[in-house]
Amino acid sequence: MDKPILQVVDIWKSYEDLQVLKGVSFELREGEVKVLFGPSGSGKSTLLRCINMLNPPDKGEVFLRGENITDPNVNINAIRAKIGMVFQHFNLFAHLKAIDNVSIGLRRVKGFPKEEARAKALEVLQSVKMEDWADHYPAELSGGQQQRVGIARALAMDPDVILFDEPTSALDPELIGEVLQVMLDIAKAGKTMIVVTHEMGFAKAVASEMIFLGDGVIIESGTPEHFFVSPKSERVKNFLNQLDVLYGSHEKLLK
Amino acid sequence: MSDIPTLSEIIYYILRRGLYHTLLLTALGLLIGFILGISLAIMRVYGAKELMWFSSGYEKLFRGIPLIVLIYIFAFGLPDILWYIDPLELRLGSVVLALSLRSAAYQSQIFRGAILSVAPGQMEAARALGMKGSQAFRHVVMPQALRLAIPSWSNEYAVVIKDSSFASAIGIVELTQAAYFVSVSFREIWALSYLILAVIYFLFTYPITRIFGERQSKKLKKLGMGGG
Image 1: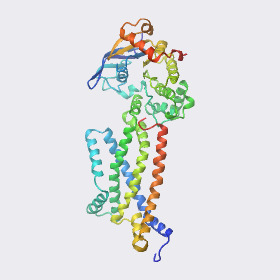
Image 2 (image 1 turned 90 degrees about the vertical axis):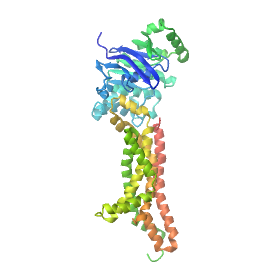
Image 3 (image 1 turned 60 degrees about the horizontal axis):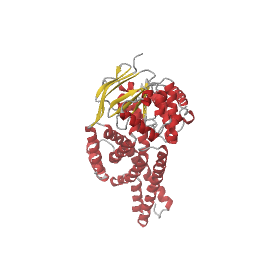
Image 4 (image 1 turned 180 degrees about the horizontal axis):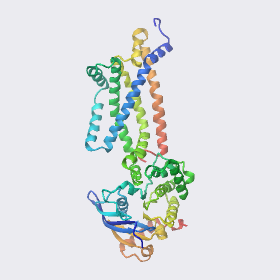
């Protein structure tokens, strides 16, 4: 196999007295979709935010294509441009129309000329089926539409990897499907992704590996088959049962 | 004006004599206050500890001194240092200085509040795209903060235009001083001249604060901005 795109090595992170991550390591290869799941407070979101250094880890290293991005001498802005992020609450720029939300990174970070950035943004909006809403402000869009623009904003930068931080958990149930569908399309098109989600239908459909995080460590990892057929630890079994009871499964939403 | 003047004559006289200086003082006071105020707000929100102290100390100082005292300090103090400048210009400068330094203290608070009410996720999303902190501020936080500040800022305009009337205390002929001239020339109608003055000030403040205050508030709500 080729070299990993992303290597996460022994990440530790605490907030004041709370030790959130206690030595997490994994690797991600080109085209892989990694699903992170686990109880709330287990450190999933923190782990994503350590990977793009929004919250730098206390200890441990992250390598993007072999480059140590936790090194303080590295140009973190240039690195972040190669790591897309999709947020739970979308975080679209409220003062910009959908198209400008998608093109602003191209213009300000990648230095695209205005027209070129616009053309590319429109193309990416098409890929998430939002081209008809290009001239609308975020507040005029539904949650699902906003999140699709959020995904387009990350995609437009052509990142090496996209981090999804619970992208559907702030959405009304009837809007989850459209977002999962877009994510599924991206995954099938070969994008490398790390997805924090409890949507087991999505995981089953595209995850190359699933990681169960609990109390800041990886408790169990394996393929979706492994988790849904024969999970090892009691904790994982209980958690998956609870998910089924609480959320049901959205598999039927996916084509 | 030996006979008692008509209403429109009084209005015309007050506007002709006074409007220019009132608007000039207001515009300069607000503009300089804006530049200083934004700088102070940025220091207060993003600055190192020393800059935060400076900014917060500045706010406390200039909010704690009556405007008329500031005007007297500058108007009577500056000529000793800047004796070569034309006295009228120096008096105007003193009022501009007093208005803008004090307005900066209030505008700093307005913009600090506005910057802080831009949702933190906005800055995060900008940084996650690879923008530098300064780019994220300029292209994402600042444009939203300015929009959020408009309603409070229109209120500050109302304060400054009304307080420019203190310039009359050092003999600058602006609206209030012009009305005073009318009142002393025609003792019989002194109350009327001030009543007209009051209406003029009102007409220069209320419609503006209404347009920029209420309309902008509605627009912001539509954009879902401000903590959203």
